[in-house]
Image (cartoon, rainbow, N blue to C red; front, side, top):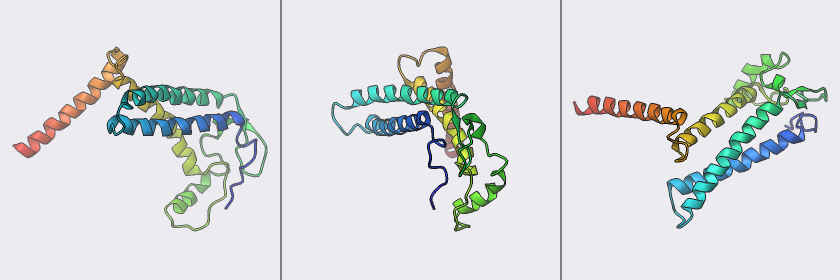
Length: 180
């Protein structure tokens, strides 16, 4: 079933551009990540590392820009209307579709056959989209913890030490359980 929000007011050009930048950056990050971890192309690993770092910055800065733009750019939050509100107001389920949360969950669990009609985004989509900026920021932080020019800065070294400390504690725990 076609969605009701396929018009310009629902998807302003600035958000379409940031969406495509995210897509391209994620594809490059996935491909270069595999090339770094499994170097199957000779002499490509250094280029892959450089591209990986560059597109890591691209996706992080794009995420920051998208969050800031949400406070200034207006968008149409509901299907079938061209009434616009500032985009950040549409991040959480609104009054008119909050009651559909259970219906959407049933649909995604294949317990309901018909696609529920709702606002521009369904309730589960809105909730899951709230986690994307958080995940991008966490991935950027962990990447900076591993990148040689920044890994010894106290802010990033603390993250490396925390994860390293947790991993060594886990190894000791398993060693104690299975060896003794």
